[in-house]
Image 1 (tube, rainbow, N blue to C red):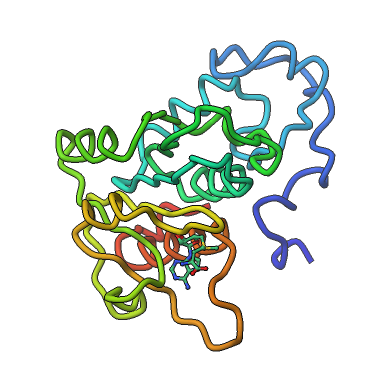
Image 2: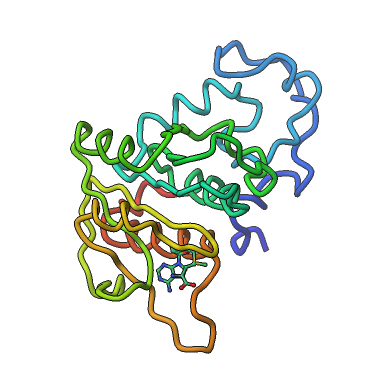
Length: 215
Ligand SMILES: C[S@@+](CC[C@H](N)C(=O)[O-])C[C@H]1O[C@@H](n2cnc3c(N)ncnc32)[C@H](O)[C@@H]1O
């Protein structure tokens, strides 16, 4: 039943749509090659046949005042997942702290539609956040952290995540207004950083997102 389908299933299925049928539209947001050859990209149906630039410009009109940062001093493999989820939630910018290189595989090409910024170290990120009136909230289950489930997150917010292994760096935790933990109930000491980022982003969306604007 069509009414039970979600946004990624409304079109022609997982392989996208074929060439545009009939006369091609003249709206400059449309991409001539995609109209001619079809659009198999992983984009919501509203953006079918649009150029990448037009899609980014449209998301830019309604990005959230939410920024995500992840420490990347050991080439963290979770960054692709973080970028993909940030794209889904129309996050303003994903900040990579430390190494410039990261594994793009998990991003599933969503990095083409997501603003990314690199900072060589935590200090540079914190200075940037102050200049841009963002409140930094570290996310980790370290001593002294407060439950994410009970806090009110700032609206103009930068959520900062640590890496697999070392977790959040002391400098990052010191520079944050607070550190928030995600409640756990099993045996593992922590969850995957990409999963933690998804949970925290959604916590912000539940508090500040306008659901009438969601697909
Ligand atoms: C796999 S964790 C490693 C560090 C973790 N503190 C430990 O003791 O194992 C990597 C990152 O994922 C996030 N993370 C994982 N589990 C979390 C939790 N329960 N609460 C908040 N953040 C978490 C944090 O950003 C953390 O820095």
